[in-house]
Length: 193
Picture 1 (cartoon, one colour):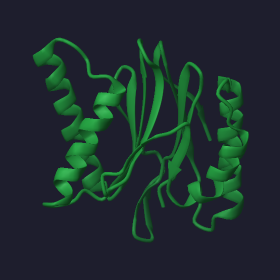
Picture 2 (cartoon, rainbow, N blue to C red):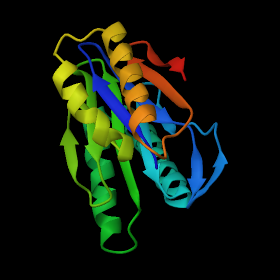
Picture 3 (tube, rainbow, N blue to C red):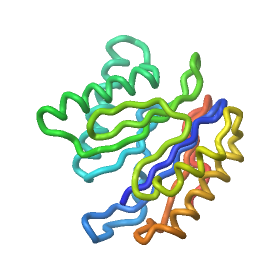
């Protein structure tokens, strides 16, 4: 039921998430922010069972912060992506986390980046991507509309069109969404629907 989308622009990454918390056929709440900050310039958009989602993000975030304290420097988005993928792969052989996620971040040296991971520890660096039933309707639309110099306004328009497509075509479409941007100034909420 979760819906996440991400768009990488020239100097930003924009992510969108539904805000519903559901268990089976029951909606628990409509205001859960599933875009979890890792640090000032990185976020996880994470879907899956609530327990796995919370435990896994807290574990990764704590270890990323510990690494920064021990070494006196922050991990890059690429490093966080590979560390997260390694932890998913290790857990896969023991007690797997049922989590799919997008990792979005902005680094001073390399700029914006967007990564997609699933519960099987697959890792892909992408320009546009998403997860959930809603993404099935929106991914092809984003592939058609995306270009390397996409502006923040164009990306926001793409996100809003994607949300409308999900609401129009998906029977179990979530009612509320949040859109955030990660750029050189940090993480900011740009729109809620």
